[in-house]
Image (cartoon, rainbow, N blue to C red; front, side):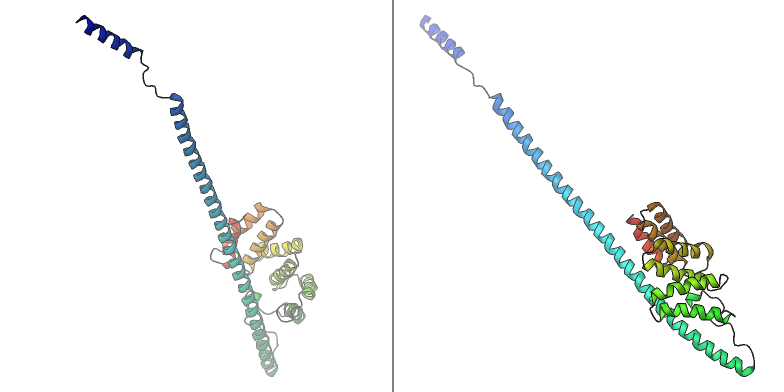
Length: 254
């Protein structure tokens, strides 16, 4: 019995002296840090991918906006070409009507100066009783619409405005002179004539285009506040016009 107790005691002491199994804290910490590093790298890669996608989306939106602006610009240019063609056809019709009415008036012994239907460019005004005024305006318009002598037309319109300050064609003369100067990038002079139409000819069918051109000139001169005001003016006063569509596009790109 004593021997058994002694054996058990020796075994217990041996067991007590045996080292217990130990889990390496350092290894566990390294494993946790490795997982955290991998997660951080995954999150960083995902963030970079999202940033690239966001940049690509932004680029696409900008390209779409630019293409829309180009399309609207071309539409406006086409509308202007068609309008000039209508002006030309109506000018021819007006001159034919003038000849016919003149012949009829001569036969009846009355004056050859009569009111005739006017074209869009003449903004629904009566044909002037002053034959020299008519001839001066016709000569300037013909240089633009028929002969394409744009540089020569500039002094013609200047002379007309100076010679006939009370003409019923004066608003249109300012518009055409502004257009000719604008095409030559003479923005300061063009601005004066466009402003004349906007401020003093509220019924002119060229007024919306003059507003738009004033906005474009201001934008070209880095005066974005004035450009924004002019574009908004076009949108407010002529919301369904081609010019309003172009103004909206330019506002979005300011």
